[in-house]
Amino acid sequence: MGDTENPFSESDFLKNDGFSPNLTAANTSSLYPFLLSPVMDKTINIIMIIVLLTIMVSLGCTMEVTKIKDHILKPKGVAIAILSQYGIMPLTAFCLTKGFQVPEATAVVILICGCCPGGAMSNILALAIKGDMNLSIVMTSCSTLLALAMMPLLLYLYCHGFSNLQKAVPYVGIITSLVVILIPCGAGILINYYRPQYSKIITKVGLSVLMISMPVICIISIVEIGSSLLNMLSPPLMAIAALMPLIGYAFGYIISWVFRLAQPERRTVAMETGCQNIQLCATIVKVAFPPAVIGPMYLFPLVLGFFQLTEAALLVVLFRCYHWFTTKGKESYRPTSTEEKLKEVSEETA
Image (cartoon, rainbow, N blue to C red; front, side, top):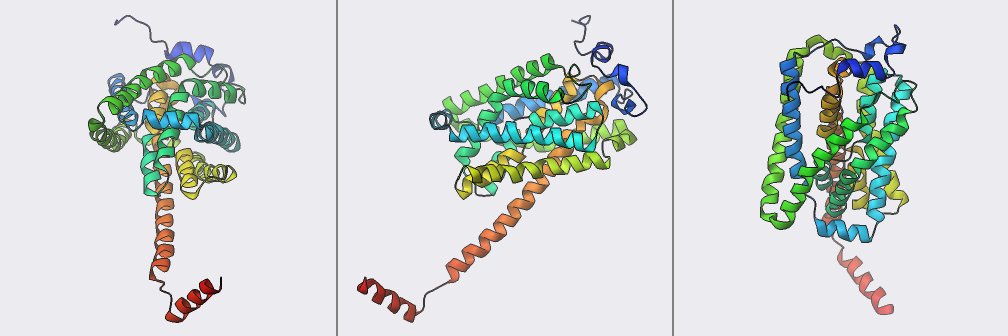
């Protein structure tokens, strides 16, 4: 086991990725020095894998076979899930990377974020914004299950829009990661089907692990990497991280309006579109790519997660305020006796 070659070793990757012949002064930032010690790098990898597996089990516990089956028989929700999650977000990521002209390795990370399926956080946000929870669960379920085929396919297609990325993405590693990740998700579905009494507990544990792990990984990385994080916190990357979820929320709502969905369903589609599975994206980037190529960019999904959660929280607050004022106005209104008499007269006349 100790002598087994790493399929993503730096030397092999750099020989075949298409980056090395083009290392001009303008794009040498695509390659990073070894920022983490081997022990710390392996420790972060293990933590991220364990956390992701736990979260995927809890995500599976939110999926109900009967609801998925019902929506498959009426595939409107499934069609919207595919169109919004795998249409809007990858195209948004591609346009932003082109517009801001980021380096090649950075473009790969942003594209992976755009091609990721929805996560468990979208279900919570859909609930907070009074959305359709059945539709939310089905959209998350479909986008997660389709990730095995859609993520590699979309990455392959969009990477052709860059001169040096066709051979740079480790598709085998990504597919292998997705297969391994979908197994605990399937286990969660089975737990929810056969032992539903445990589902809520597992879901709460998964969300707690998610909320704790993100700051822990950030703190460890900041301590180890230090000033190199400034490369990741550049204005273009911060702008991309802020714009991606905002565009997803806006166009998710527009697409649901085009499909003439009800207001709760429109809000649900908006949340599902703008919220990516950040932990899945971060783990794939960290594990599948060599450190010399990806550098501190494995933390970009966490920055994206911060913006998508902050912007979603702002939308929830705005909606709650609007809902409170409109509901208050209807509840406080009481017809006068004259209005009641006029109503009675009009009913008798009719």
